[in-house]
Length: 486
Image 1 (tube, one colour):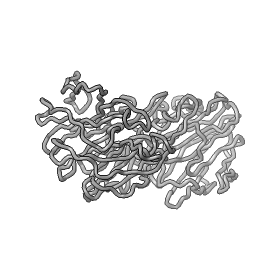
Image 2 (cartoon, rainbow, N blue to C red):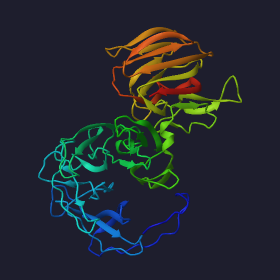
Image 3 (tube, one colour):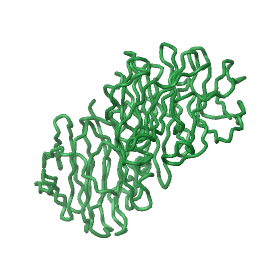
């Protein structure tokens, strides 16, 4: 089935049947689409039968392919490109190289391996999809637990770089996407290694924009659950995007384009660029269709006056953060953070433009009876209520004292003190290259904070109550602003 849009993805027509799958006992599902240089439309997906770990006979899930050379009016018979194994998972992308070769990076279950059971392979076609060749080499690494079907190199995506190399990015279970490179059009691959992108067991999407930049979508998340949010939901709680103008050497953005507000997930991205330049993003996990302006990812400032509530903030699995009237200027709004329930954290986090250096400022007021809060910056999303020191953490104690963390993990007092009922301006200027940040209170430097948790850049503010029990007082934030240097 297909739907068509004539207005850059704003509206869509009724479903249309393209072709009929063969009745072979499998369960067919869709995957990526590709239009080649010749104008041929290619569709890929799974023909799933069954799965039983380490049972190479019962486990069967095949790659299917269909193509049309007349704009989708008629379709050739469904093929099953060979990939050397009996079982593959989600198909997340297909690409055509400048040479004309089509690559379909997929993963397979290699039950001969005890650890790293998932391997990445790349079937290819040199005749516009009329026939297919089996992969020559598999990409392997030993991540995840032994005797676990999720271990290893799963659900890769790939893109051709300007120098002719093919860049592959498989998902893994150790907190990062991995990467490998091919110098011979996808036949052989370099030894895989960690990429810079944090993620856990979640597929990504990579797209070459018409202006030549690379665009990436991925779950920039940790994987620890909290309360009613499981670890499987936490690792797919936000979908991030970044853009590169130098073939992946540097990246801008790391901005959220989708975020959970309850149980579920936002995952399995598929992306294409519309004629108007925006990118149409489909999230298979969550069943969402979005439009993303790539220029959003190049912004270097973020300001929040809370006039639109907390729409930019995540409070998943937490309570106590809300936008309320300013206690001194009721016509304005501020963020208030409390811990109203002793059995639930009071917390919120905010995504801002990624950079290795920048400046964050906010005006803070403590209520009488305030029981303490911690601030930290990180390079990825975690549920806001989790205790994370991140980079350059500082906290305000119940007495209003500003403290920073020392090399041994102990909290150290600074000269800074906030008085309840008064507004104080706090500024944190960070530099990940120098691994240091400067914290000022009301224009006076009160601390230099070392970066004990290393990161190449930062893109999240984490704000969490450290009250040992319920705290109905809390604090207020007025007029938060972040500016970054690239």
